[in-house]
Image 1 (cartoon, rainbow, N blue to C red):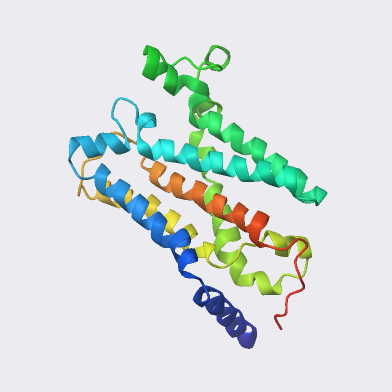
Image 2 (image 1 turned 30 degrees about the horizontal axis):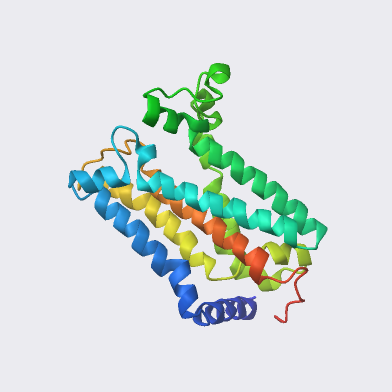
Length: 248
């Protein structure tokens, strides 16, 4: 058992050590700079910088929320590409389902147009408001947290534990779905970006303004980015079906 554990750890260390400069930038340097800058701006107590990240009138107009939309569109774009250009039928079906789900998330994020309606006309009535009484489905019944809570256990299992145990997985389809090791770094960054604003506000280091109870939006941006990187791995980097592992 000890020998197997040591071999798994050595395998993981090798994967991380072999990261290229470009991978370091995409998997942690770039995201850390972006999210760190946004946090600095938001807690800077400089009004113009705070408003740039999350306007108090409506946080959805800020760069933080809108960059989330860009990442989601990126997910929809590469999965649409995969649907049209990959040959394997299983991959095509999976890509189509993820593409449709990402578009659903996109429309949820913009409240089905409510943000733009408010910006242009001063009213937040969305396309679904007259049927549900809310501007999006994930706030229906005030259950937004229930949509988000399963994400962190899923990320821990898939992006942190998964790469560590990948050499032991024999099923070729499960092996394909396990991401490459570098994704562990950005997955852990998502946790840090969730905790950091809570600590800053909880210890009264800085005042919370435009985001209110939604400081998790920092982490949400990183979460979307993690899934974008994961899909890039599956579509452009991993072989399907994967080769048999050489791990012993």
